[in-house]
Image 1 (tube, rainbow, N blue to C red):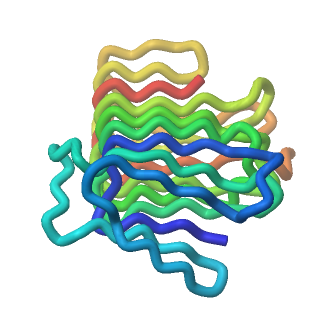
Image 2 (cartoon, rainbow, N blue to C red):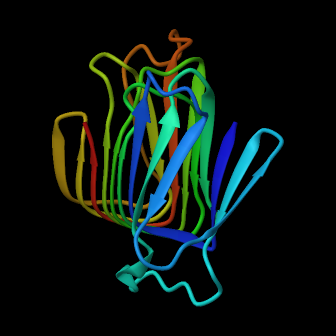
Length: 186
């Protein structure tokens, strides 16, 4: 399944419920998006008046843990907290830059792509202990913390690879196609 947010996502909490019977549950504060379930996909379409800075669009999304999910945001992502530790994550695609986004990643099943198109400010990925990752940042980075190392600045085209990544079938490949400020990978 895939859940897609258009034209972006702001002030959201994503959670996982392993005991839930439905594929997903959504609850929103203020202005409600249009929710369009289609075969193998759920589109959460915020109204044309949607603005990332407008806090009337907050809400909570709960996904069923029994279903593999791909999460996609087709626009900017701001103030999102995603606890996906119990999810089977097929992929994460944030297409319009991110700001104040924190993601707890689950155990990967195979090679799991994570893509952030655009820049990132205050972005944190927390992965399970021992899970290998490859992180590539196309633009320059400031305040980068990765693999237990802290960098005030990192050059463009920075790549971090955990030892043993190539031998591991279950791993994360994270690409940030822009610069970053306050990127943390733990």
